Structures are given as C-alpha cells and as structure tokens.
Length: 101
Image 1 (cartoon, helix red, strand yellow):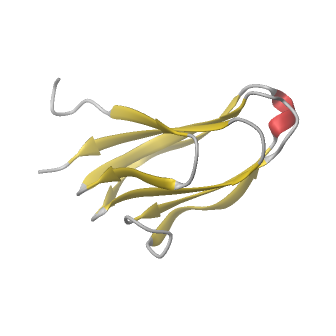
Image 2 (cartoon, rainbow, N blue to C red; image 1 turned 90 degrees about the vertical axis):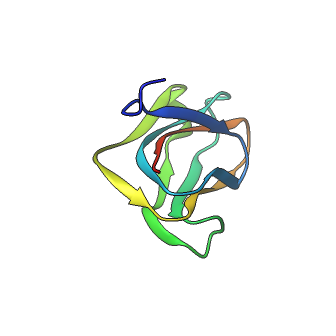
C-alpha cells in the first residue's frame, strides 16, 4: 500500500478504531434499520477522555443511508482514534486514517 493512502476500519460499538499516531481523514456513519438516530463522537486518543476531533453529533437514522464527516486537513492524532457511539439498532462507523511513522 502506498504511504499516502488512507486506510479504513469499521466499528459497530464504542471503542478504539486505531492505536498509534495517525492522520484522521473522516468517517462514514450509517444506521441500517432506518429508524434510530445515532450519536457519534470521535476522539484523538484511546479512550473517550481524549481530545474531541468530531464533537458529539446526532445523525438522522431515518435516511437509511450513509452520512459522513469529511476532513481535508488531515487532523493529526497523537495516540489513536477512539469512537464513542450511542443509539440503538445497527450502527456502523467507518473511519478513514493514515498511520504516521
């Protein structure tokens, strides 16, 4: 894989998406049941005590599609990416990142 290529990882519950220094490149958020809203917060860190890089946001579950958070500035994360997910139903957050170092 080229060093300037972003990688992706999907999470379906709160937890660490990536551990280590990296550039955060955005996320896609989806709810498959089309009923339940989902609340997502993304942190620079390996816990929810890290620095917020995506403030707590409520995404509309009734759209039955993907919503996203794009980032063209490539936010530098020092210790990793932690995703905090709240809501019910089948929620999936796909994070774009590029390891540094």
